[in-house]
Image 1 (cartoon, rainbow, N blue to C red):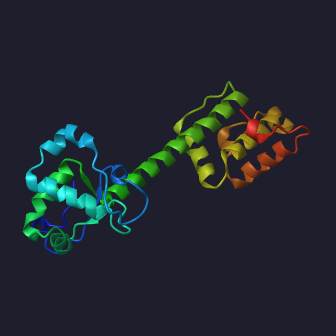
Image 2 (image 1 turned 90 degrees about the horizontal axis):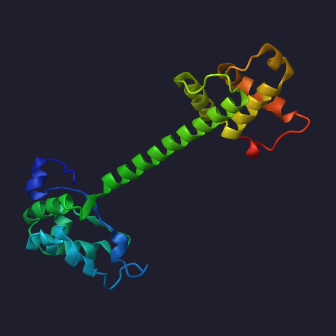
Image 3 (image 1 turned 180 degrees about the horizontal axis):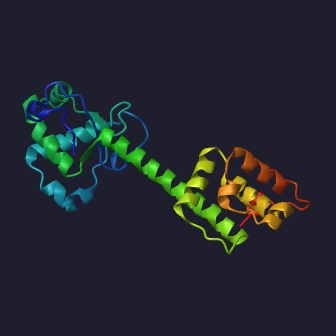
Length: 224
């Protein structure tokens, strides 16, 4: 739904500066050229109950928005600033608020800033999901190196996350874990706690070096 600047804008759109994005805009393009002489109107709209529920003015405005969205660099976006849109549609600005609200509620148009916010949120969710997968990957390798040790508590996850934030890759952390596990002195002392291996940059780099000094090092890409 469009977030209007204030309540008075709901009534007359006075002074409003907004962009909306057309839902499924790609369906209305018939070629990549800008300023096309015509746009697609799919027959499937006849089977869209939301279309049939539109009042005449809202439907007419929607079709005009489709045409406006094809102009220049708009690429599916339309400026619905009151004076601009009213002039383009040859309507009084006081007639626009309700139809635009209806079109937003039906999903035919979407507030452009919300689209961007949604994209940012999706990107953030993907990054968080990737981070969880990376942490699980490192924990799995640690468990294979030390099957009798407990894994997966929140402290361990934070340690791995912090190491990744420092710029180390998943492969780096796997090499550090393996370098610690294979080192004779650490094997004798049984110093394999994850909090010790990933304590800080120096510890991680030290164990990565120990791994790389192995006589027959394993390709990091094939570490479990």
